[in-house]
Image (cartoon, rainbow, N blue to C red; front, side, top):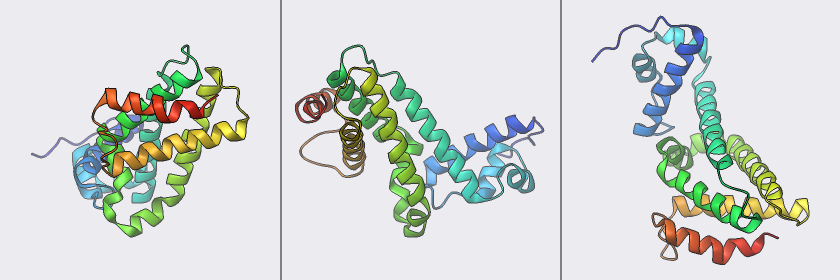
Length: 195
């Protein structure tokens, strides 16, 4: 089915392009996402797409940033009033839920086994890890964590690395689809790291 040409404002066109890019990445992955398909689904010409996003990398980077912002907004909803340990458990549970259920995030994690895409995304992955760790550290500090900043940041990075690994590689230790098991795991093994 051919979509009608999108003659909306620049902002609305960019939103349509990002929505189409998210759908395409969800279906085929980062490495195989087609600019032609994205333009067609957004209802814009290739030239309009490239005026809005000058390269494929620029579009994918913006989609990654948008995905990260969405994840950070979701993590901000994790309650901090129950104390630092409970906030750490809640953040781990919500983070793992995001990593296993959000299709675009899952595709960004997998990168379709395309090593050239992985090399190109390394800086963004490192940036994601640093930003997510810093955001979690701020939330845990607000929840009452008293440990030194460097230790708190290291624990937050460990939580994020562990959640990312468990979302990517199945383990007999924990069924990541079982919310109660994830919570119990975090309470037993991760909460004690925060003080």
